[in-house]
Image (cartoon, rainbow, N blue to C red; front, side, top):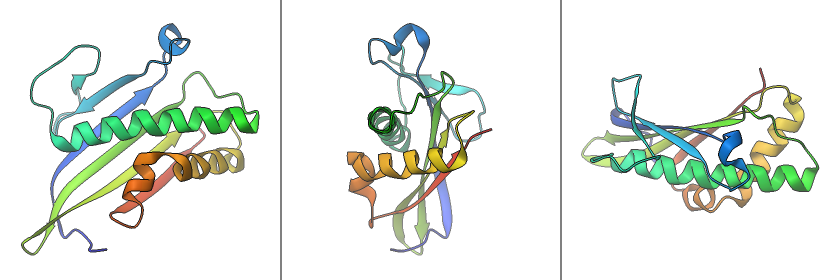
Length: 146
């Protein structure tokens, strides 16, 4: 894999379960634009012009969050109501070549770090988007429990 020397754009997502939609298997996903802390797009209504990196991060975060739920069920772990997944996908260059790289952060406040880490890595093993990127782009997986 080639390392990115210059990041050109980053697509960011913040994915949560909300109590109102959790029973129906729906997610709330917000997309941020480069240089803007406020969500540029929320998947509650269709808004024009999200970047490809935002869309990829959004689809990946929805899939990964579902995988976390599946693994938690298999492990008999009760997930906190404020669980969230943040995914950042960078488009960058090394010389004239273009590459992607990503950072996933699973936030599971109140879980022990060991259980949360096992949950995060097991979900990463079964998530189809994680499988598709494995060995193809640099991906960092982070776990926060506080």
